[in-house]
Length: 63
Image (cartoon, rainbow, N blue to C red):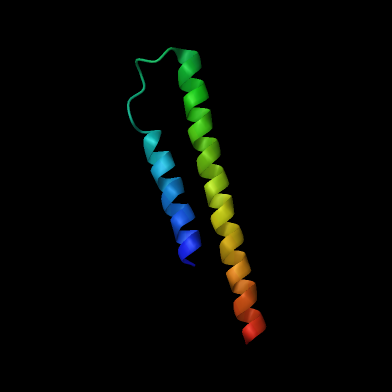
């Protein structure tokens, strides 16, 4: 559970970075930067989901 929470916190921090001003960058650099941040956040959320699913399966097996 802690691992999943860590992944979610990292994803939130990554998404928060998208809110920081990057308006002075050229348009193409903005697009690349935002895509990288969003892609990383997406992957972290996916990792958290996998961890939660695995923990849920382990809990069900113990019952």
